[in-house]
Length: 293
Image 1 (cartoon, rainbow, N blue to C red):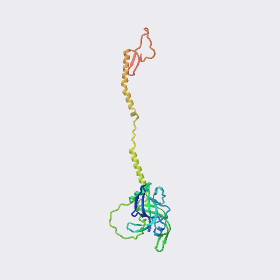
Image 2: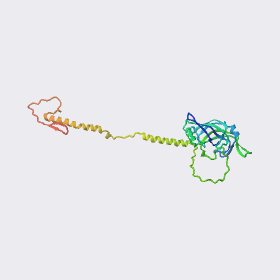
Image 3: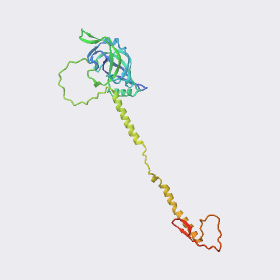
Image 4: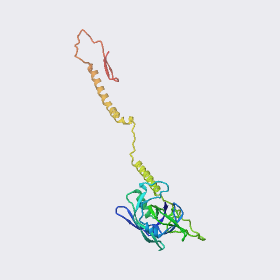
């Protein structure tokens, strides 16, 4: 299976009401000789084969990365090709190319689809790389390998800087001796052929932000020691002590004056004149007791 890469040339982008992004007449595979990233051998794509098999698609699914020996799942699906057909497009220099063209619908209903939309809008993803098979043959007249037939299995959205030899419409150029003019060092462009890595970073950052937010909003619980929590009741009891002591003091004073114990229970007993009282009353103010001795 070969993997080709075609840049978006003056694309027409339309943001739909349902959140999808529509790319009109995007070139998927153009006539020309190029070296793919999978087989890495030059192959000439003829206009005849492109026109004959432009609609020969097993799947029209667009992924956020190529297979590369790692299985893909539903999270890698980000778009689909709508009505692929043979046509022509102009490159940035005004040259007309025969190609397989198609409208591309980038999903807005999934996180991976929305991430791809953002990368396309920011021009960080500019290429479509079709995955295909088919017959190839050596043309003795041209001295090159050419396509006889094509069968498409899908495509991937890829970064322009991912592979310099994997662009469509670029035949191997003869090396030229040039003296480069001194220029300032350009910033290195990060290759991002797999947006899954970007999504993982975004998800990790989101979790960290939520954790910080939860920590700030959490209520601070202060445990009050049991001894301190019982102080209000103890203070109330202490405040009542003076009144109790005064009442007891008044009672004792009254008893001393009357010489009669108020604590005697039961029926009163009459004392005869022949039985003199041979005891006295003992009053303990500290203990709050009265007893006969």
